[in-house]
Image (cartoon, rainbow, N blue to C red; front, side):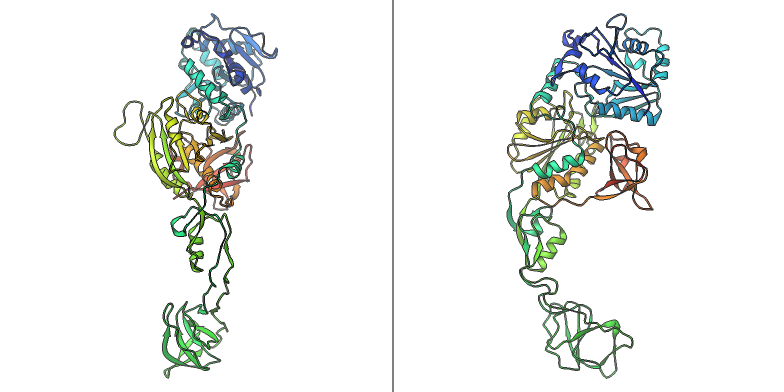
Length: 586
């Protein structure tokens, strides 16, 4: 990856906060300036622009914009001059008011800068709002843009933004501009149930295992199997009788006794009909597949091997193989044989296999019952859109997506953005095993889920994911036993994470056996991989394996059209790397 320097902006007047030293505000045991410095530890040189801070490491260069408080453009200019003529080809520019920023987010921007060659790569929050003070610039482009301005004093950042720009949606890039936002950030981090910044994010496999191991099991009950597809057996089931129940014909043809030729009787044995009377040696009777063979039968001569003469005699055709073609009583299963063990998912195959041996009912856990909660004042499900609103493009399809993973949707509601809107939702879980929350999982002032989980004393199992997109995902268990799955509001991220986590979540709640992953080579992994694992759409390759989509527009699901599924791409993967494939529901 191309070398980079860093400019951290730690001045400004913080007028909306009464002029406090905003970068020095401590959230979660660290000042916001130290959060920014921690995010750029991999940079060659770091310049902090703002008032002198004697506590900083001597290796960090400190300068001041002129005049002090002249705005971010002036501060960037001062920082670039301080880097000197030997500055690296790339420059990371960060504001020091980002309590949730991580080094992985910066690494992602650097990777995209290398890949795109754009003049500047900026972060965008989950709503798509650009964050121009979280970006990576080509140094030459930044120098050129600054030189075009008559004055750097009190210029808006948009005056500096070049035409050749790439926006990257990232988690944890919300800034703190007001006292309320600082309090909200502290509630998230300091609540003790942390949602993700006191511990490193979990890798996808770690998160899955946490769900399987730590979610509370649903209470088992006894019911008819055909009613509970998606559940899992809470106890083994065994055959109540043999399979087949009696000797039956395996083919359409003739039941025969002894060696041929045979005299063909006029009666016929139909499956499910009355059993023909016993055969004497040299006799044959027409018989259908599945019919109970008569006593005295020594074999079944299938139709394609049989010839019938005009005088109603049956002969075996020349060169026909000698076959029995009888399924004997109990040859598949005897009474008491194991059909399926505890933890087996209740699928169509299991329901059918159990019914065949007279086991229509069993003890099960599940299926998981879900309530879907769409969040955000800007989301509208139906009717005309008003200013600032956007269409709910995933709420209507979530019940179908959930059902493909064995989860039954009971209810779907919309929740407005209010400070305590989630408290009632989290306390009213009767009739639901799972709350699927879309949005409100980030760290912004409007993202209230994490603070509500803290107030509810929820047990957080997955605080964040080391995955792009989807890093803001949270999974928790409430005191009632209900699971909360908090998905990012970004449509592609929500669907991708749901596809990756739904099955392990069901396994954790029902005790179902873990599904086997579908693995294969990703032929263009090096185009996609970066410092953080990614999940992207993919198509099957004619030679086997898959090809992934390097660039994904995450604000909608258009990138899934014409694709066969998703692939989970490990960090720094090379072409041909073995990856997990997640089929898309039809």
